[in-house]
Amino acid sequence: MDPDNELLWAYFFIDNDTTKLRILADHLVSKGYTFNDIFELEADNISIREFTLQVERIEQHSLESLQQRNQEFYNLAIQFSIQDYDGMEAGPVQ
Picture 1 (cartoon, rainbow, N blue to C red):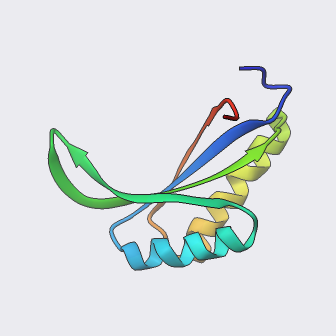
Picture 2: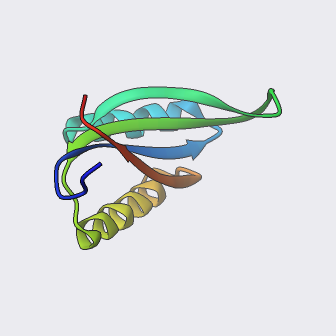
Picture 3: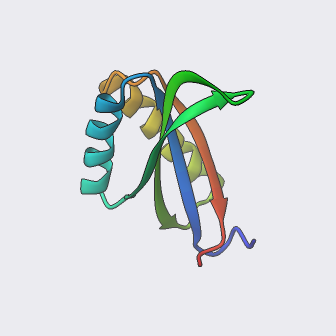
């Protein structure tokens, strides 16, 4: 992957309330993100009653813009009373 080009960025939020995650997902979709899924977390194949929201967007980031995006999402987690912004991962644009 070439970080100087656009990548598909996935962003993750965790909470035990899927309703709150869906509200946040709707907000992020209105800002141009694509809803991917809300899935239940498991540890050793046992549900731990926490859920992860995954949204995606094709973006190009510098270290500074990625730090800004992360701070924005930490703030959104607080604003929407979400337990945690769990970070991101990037992959090639398909």
